[in-house]
Length: 216
Ligand code: E4P
Image 1 (cartoon, protein in one colour):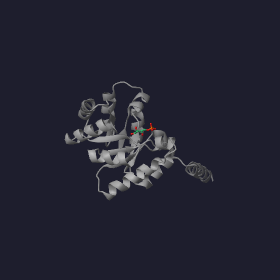
Image 2 (cartoon, helix red, strand yellow):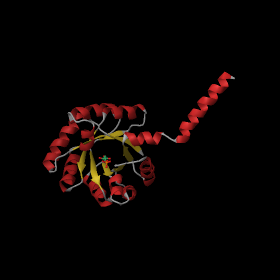
Image 3 (cartoon, helix red, strand yellow):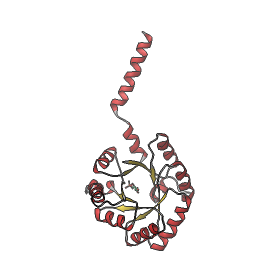
Image 4 (tube, helix red, strand yellow):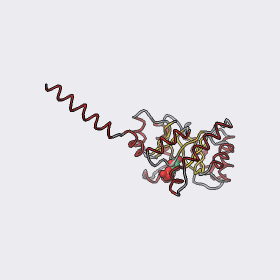
């Protein structure tokens, strides 16, 4: 399972890249606002330089022509841009048109296996079910990941399942076991994944024993 960072914050992306684990980045309008706004194009260009893999840039238009205009402009910024398009009838049409133009897409706001299947058929390369937001309304978000991973394998569909809306480390483990090809993870959760109390206490004990032995 590939690891993407779910952020539009350049410093967070530099941190994950420095760990050697970064394989892509997903942004969305809310993450862009959280990172402080400014020129979305400049931020995307910078992210694309740091990131060794796909960088998702989300359209906000809700009509086909508007999505195409925004997406084509994003695609000109860098070769690793994936245009993020919300699931909808115009979204499906836009993704089919982007595919015909050779522009890669990530279909976002997926909440059911059927939505994911349609997005894959329309030509999206990445399919993003939102696990945490389903869990929030008392539905098992991981079921959609498992179903889509199975459907794509059975029918040899090339689209990749990108587990999004990852809220805690257990989501990441569960997404990997459910067959997600990619998980997009906030830096806070990545940092939680690094830590274990026995690792911390083990490091402290090794340090103390080392110093005791050196003094002997
Ligand atoms: C990523 O592609 C999604 O936009 C993101 O994971 C959504 O996360 P949230 O549900 O925590 O906002």
